[in-house]
Image (cartoon, rainbow, N blue to C red; front, side, top):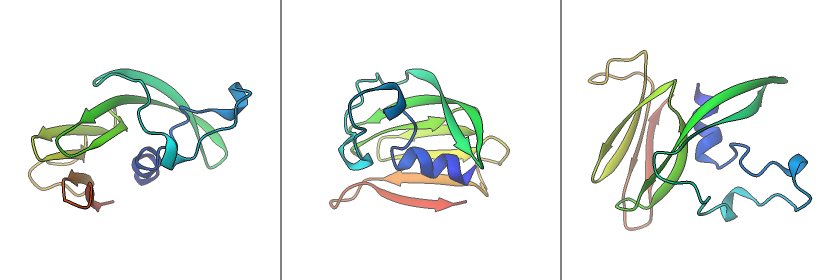
Length: 116
């Protein structure tokens, strides 16, 4: 689970698969603006411990805090507020989550608070 969260946070979700394209893959730092729409859902295949795993993602855009990212909607429940995005494991109590990710705004850019 932690790997999936961090994979998407780093922009390594396979959206720019070099094996399918003759163009060189962009680094995570340059993958800004994927062209996906807010709320768009899609599947991708990632490698975990040498095995392919199909993951179902939802693309989110929150201009208030300045983020655009994908998250695994089957593993995480999204709680969206004007000043933060919170992703909580579907197996946790949202009032006392054990596994969660908070993304909030700061003048320096988005900040993360997580417990994985």
